[in-house]
Image (cartoon, rainbow over all chains, first blue to last red; front, side, top):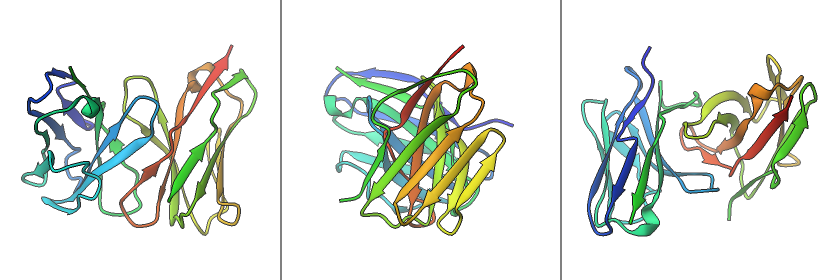
Length: 114
Length: 111
């Protein structure tokens, strides 16, 4: 079956612009996660969705970052007024339920802010 | 503050040997621990999960141990193959959804 997909795969933007990153989770997966991975760093948790609700937004670095999920499926991560320090790979993952189950990751979106 | 540390050095081993990776943590009481594999340009892929009350888990050529007293997990790849070359990430969770990841250890298996 189809795995987690993300778009775009690469995004280059100018400092100060807004960007939207999209994640399509595996069908039927109720839990969805966003992470950020900077060069040589571990994955940094950003936000968790259960259905369309986000019970944990604690990892969002600033109020320039927001995310939503609609229809219990597609999620969008929006970064407003991008800064150079936002450059990283943004990874989305989904899991069957909110539990100790494994997370399935997408290929990521590489964001470069110039 | 909570910290997760994996082998700081990359691991280079000969094909057929066993690779042993460490994951140490501090200021953490994980309920479970997971290991993932990540290839360049790709997202991580789940390998194994071990719970706090389990000492050891095996899957094919992979073995994971979890010592909550030492606050350490060991990840072994036996009879290693060049196809095992990748970065391996450990991830801990103390609740039922949020994973905290280590920076990873890069393994290169020489033919």
